[in-house]
Length: 117
Length: 111
Image (cartoon, each protein chain N blue to C red):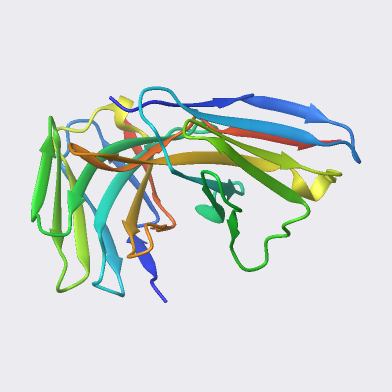
């Protein structure tokens, strides 16, 4: 089945530094990937839509310069949290849209727990 | 604006019970509906995906139904087990391929 690998699974960084999170589709090509943020005991909030070869589309209220998204290939999208602050601490999850004939749905990565100290 | 609601927010049942989780959505113009499972601190595992033209999908002890006209879906879990304890999320895909999530149902199956 479709697999999405997300790395790292957990990261602790100092305030003011930048952190990069990778999302890879392992066995299918994903022209569209999505980045979500999840606060404790809450549902997923869509941050942005990442399209291969073009600029990401950000949801209202999400800072483009804070959360840099790059989708340079059909299997890789990256989210960089720039100048991280404690309020950026959260669980970040990526997903890829699998347009295969048997499964037109989302496959999610395992998530990244970011802690900014 | 599409809104997805899940009821109940939390559920605790003894092992062996059959149970139903509910999901409702306000805009029937959806591409598909997907049920996910999320364990604490983990990502999402897709359980069942129902295309807008379908009425139900089954996988093992799980059965999901979709009534697009009334904006409702149910996830039926038969013979629940402690390993089923997790948060179950319902999400609809809108015409722009975005997934809109409900707030989830936290399920605890007691041994």
